[in-house]
Length: 156
Image 1 (cartoon, one colour):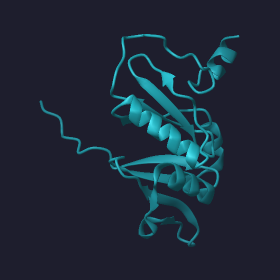
Image 2 (cartoon, rainbow, N blue to C red; image 1 turned 90 degrees about the vertical axis):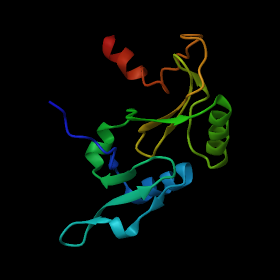
Image 3 (tube, rainbow, N blue to C red; image 1 turned 90 degrees about the horizontal axis):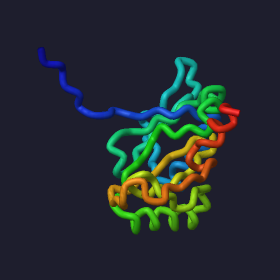
């Protein structure tokens, strides 16, 4: 029996506590463009979501106004983006410095290097290199940026 095919990812959805501050962040950090013609409105006309286009993402990003859900997402990192090399990762780090976006230092992952940024709702977006190093070589242990500080507190 064969399964039906999947054509890819249509869009990603992040809940946010403030549409405009999140839009400004994604514009500044990732060069997002709001597709106004795709704004989501309730029948009474109230705006509740923006659809964003980001070069290289391969799918739209919907930011949806749901403050309670956004608060629950704080510290989570559901999205990891790929860059080819450590030099490209360094260029992203410099970009985030230039546009005042909170970010981690360059971190050493299990097989590559990573950089983490934080949106206005404290959701983390990771950038991970395709370029690799020796497996497990000097893996970073930064509990804040790797999201392990809450896990270690739960274990206590």
